[in-house]
Length: 142
Image 1 (cartoon, rainbow, N blue to C red):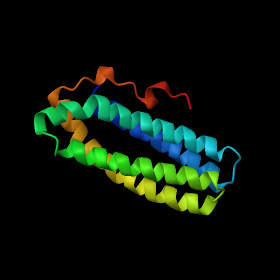
Image 2 (image 1 turned 180 degrees about the vertical axis):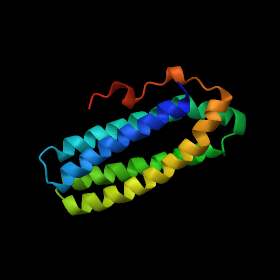
Image 3 (image 1 turned 45 degrees about the vertical axis):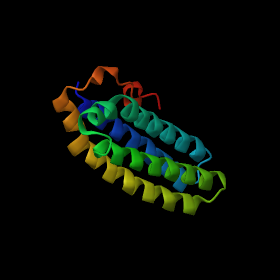
């Protein structure tokens, strides 16, 4: 399988986990915090795979200022946004958490489009090793 297929599938899986967490939060479910934790862990695993296994070949070819640098910056921003949502959930601020989660999802969708239409195809053309990826969607444990 190609990097594009594997990582795009992983995006969709993370989207499913987000939808579950958002639904639990909007319904005031007791497991909303746990659902958010599952989503956050999946996204962080996904980011780690990109940063550790996929960005390096591009950076070697393009230098440090190219698309991977932008993706790393966006990952950092989204990590902060996820922490903020988690803090709001833990504080019992359901409406505020939902609003913050909506902002996060908007950023994730924009970010994913860049990866799916630019970055992953570049990696596929370079012959990047998709076999080394251990992404969340492949386990489907949630």
